Length: 443
Image 1: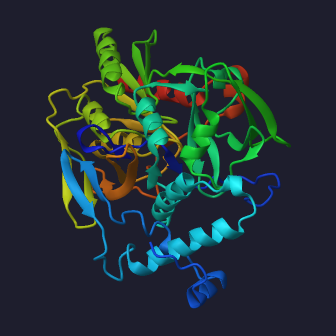
Image 2 (image 1 turned 180 degrees about the vertical axis):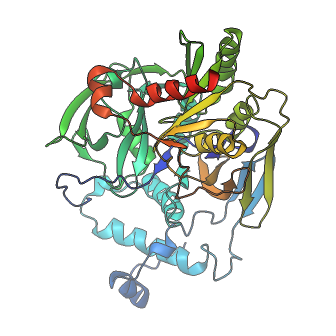
């Protein structure tokens, strides 16, 4: 879960846990002039580990301002850096030596690009944390991220998540009426290759960049789907996607239905409109569908929670210093009709905050399967050069103090989706079970 708005907490590139399936066989994943300075270069060429040094000269001699919560935090590095800092004389010399060795010996001159190398240093520094949710965004990636949270982008209309077990992308959800749906892509499909190029081990932002593209162009996806004996080869034509994050309808028996696909900037207004229509239709009960919702903005999910929860705590966070930040509800808009919430293994982060609060207060029944289990918070820190850094900064807890990271939220009623009936006959057995349960409540 991340946050945007005033505090820049945000959750666009959704990390995901292991996908418990057996896959078809896959191939392996794929300064000073010190040129000739004997001992140092000898140690370098002998295989000295460079992992800890990646990004060592990121801030040498420059001043960077991280813009967070409306304040400027100045980070300065220069010749006075201490020995245990990334920026010191040794790492600078080593980077110079690495650059010189590459320039002199690398066999393809056209592959050597200084700008790309510098971006690699920044990315490598963040990657060294070993946290799949902490990411460095270059200028283009940051702009793409900002555009996507506005609910409009050019692509295929599918939500992608990162499968940590394989390093591949998994489809967390398909937006109705988009090229992804028209091409037959399904939730939980695994993307093995994009345009016949391996994507294993790439950052999610890199995979997304390969899938997105100019309107009218095609992307070829090699898909692994559970139950299929071989990979599926699927072409999808990209187009401008205007993604409604909220869908709603009224059923004949007086039951309202609201689906929230993700928590973006546009979601609050869309949800407010949907809830107003449901209430205006004199609904006797409400089904809230959070299946496949990978999360999003903390302020947005808090606003939505305030529209249905009783008075009290919604969620609280704790950072590395033990500092606690609480988000509460005044209860003035508490939902007074029976509530059922649909969840599954792709319900993550911000959607788990909402589901967890509803369960803790006992105001709704959760139906489906155990949620993903992402109980940590990322903060996006824009940099003055147009790039940005997303870092995991805290853990979050439900009103009763539960941290669901790595475990998820168990539903009150376990109900697996019958995929065969859903994709062949359009029968959503989880939704039907939700209708049955809410009908019992309103009798």
